[in-house]
Image (tube, rainbow, N blue to C red; front, side, top):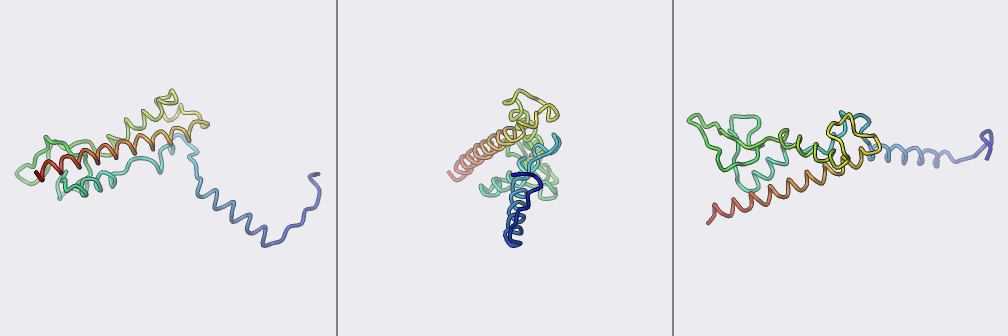
Length: 150
């Protein structure tokens, strides 16, 4: 087919093709910069909070905006003012090692060094590590909650 060849298409078919193309582009939005590499897949404090609440575990002080967002550790305690001390790691402290592991699978340790061709693999690696962490943490708290009931 020559570039200057005239092609006819119904307006409704064209509109449908455009709508389909836009929908596909929106659902398959990929990171375009190393800084956005983990956007949309990074662990979120709500994941930790949900697990803590599901098992009746309190971390942090109810006075704090980060209430119940830390990973539970057995050595935490409440001070005289009702603030938890010696809390476990928060999502940011969990994100960093997950991010490094995900990139190390592709031989990198910095976002800026990850080749664009590896972006999807690194994001998938991160998602798998994150899901494993969440599952293992959920299992751990289920065991602790069971201990407390006995």
